[in-house]
Image (cartoon, rainbow, N blue to C red; front, side, top):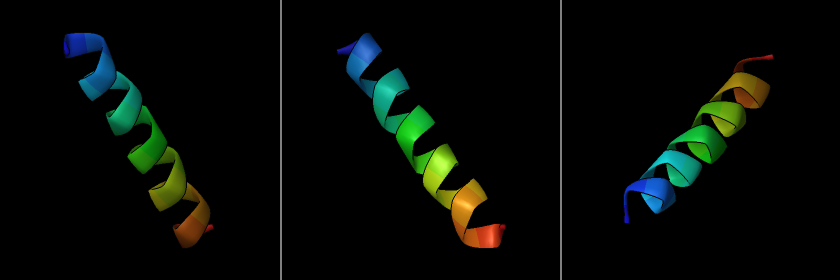
Length: 21
């Protein structure tokens, strides 16, 4: 489950970075 949370976090961060860019 820990790996899943990390993957979800990375995806959300990437989406936030692209939305702000």
